[in-house]
Amino acid sequence: MATGQMRPGERIGQDSLALQLGVSRVPLREALKILEGEGQVTYRAHRGYFVALLSLSDLLEVYRIREILEAEAARVAIPLMTADDLERFEEAEHDVERAAEVIDLAAMTRANRRFHFTLIEACALPRLIRVIRQLWDATEVYRAVYYTDQLNRDVVNDEHRKLVEAVKAGDVDETLILLEVHRQHAITALRPVLAANDAPR
Image (cartoon, rainbow, N blue to C red; front, side, top):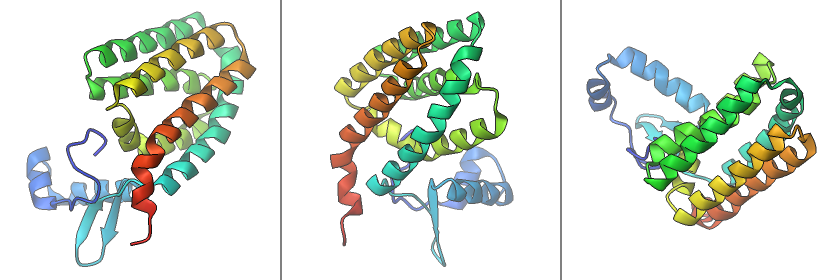
């Protein structure tokens, strides 16, 4: 779903998907229940599972919660980051740029996640990290849409470079400002695309 192989609103054929993945229907159903809990699929009685529709209201809610939790993670993490952490943080930023250059959106999404979680995981608060990871899981598909535009990819790279500078300088306040700008740019770009899905039908 986050890779764009299935479109929002598309019905999930469990038999064909189980065959494609080489698993039985039992573990597939369990996986779909987990995805339903994360908001990535929806279940309709007597009809089965469907890829969740992209929703502006959902994105705004998740990003608001992320703002609160990621700010706390960053405050704790930055003073604890080691030289190795900072090196991995910068390497992930370079990987995002390289993937953007060749328009490999799947690789860019993976590298972007590694970039952000290098910072988040440095807080060493397992429950907080787990909740933030769940929020990210719920919005991976939105990032896939965001990255399709060249301008958005350029903005991401510029913002990531500034984040590396702020984190390496140990500047918590600047990092929090940059993270919020980073999220808001994504919301602004996605708002017109998603607003139609929230309109009354």
